[in-house]
Length: 129
Image 1 (tube, rainbow, N blue to C red):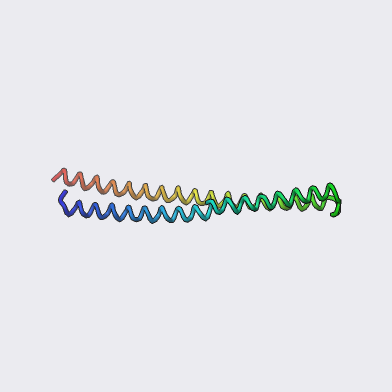
Image 2 (cartoon, helix red, strand yellow):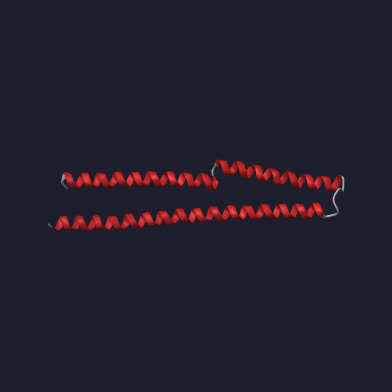
């Protein structure tokens, strides 16, 4: 290989490295939105609020009977159902993200495979000459 081909190869590698860094930053941003530390704090607060409301309703029903029978139980079941739906939604988002990541990896592997084929052809052509 001559110097011109080497410089082109180095430039292509630099470009690919910059693209990789940009994609890495995008993935970090998406991870932060889907399941980062801020998300876990909010999720923890929501869990504590749901748990507190359910326990409060249970204790008030047992001690004071301020609501008609089974109303607090029905409210608690409703809150637990809402929490289950929220958990299912978060799982859906996580699964979708995992699929997106795997799809991106597959695309990159296929792209690298085709580049490798082209390089092999070029090497074979150079060996034949």
